[in-house]
Image 1 (spheres, rainbow, N blue to C red):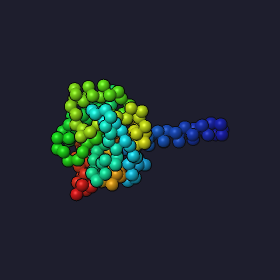
Image 2: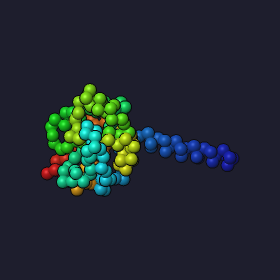
Image 3: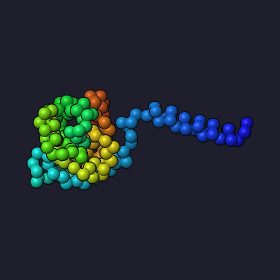
Image 4: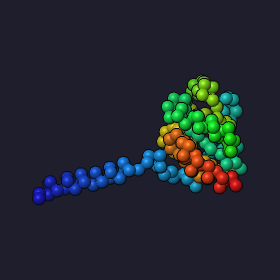
Length: 175
């Protein structure tokens, strides 16, 4: 065969192989370079109490979940009932990071659907979300007593993820 025919066929076959491998992967399992590393510092204004702040330092000594959400996020509405259930169990503090949102819309959203958060903080610019490597909302992080990220979930939490991944890790870290 002619080299001008073989080379494009080989390149095409390699591209098809990469595509096939990529299609078999779960996009929620994108590995985070932050797992087992210190959580990025933040000091953000509380959604419900303008002028008051919450920082990473305030959470030291506690195992806690950081849930990144927004009032404009359709998938956040999907996971919200599960977050409400989880918060009633009061296993660990659930902190909401309101990502690239407006205060009035976020407050109205929580008023309408219920507030599962021990505290909700505002990341209007999105810089804290960027520091945490947020791909999009919702995302959830489990942070240990020393402020180290131990788990990251991209997309809505599910009952299965909560039961099989988050709760066993919580027991291990909070034990």
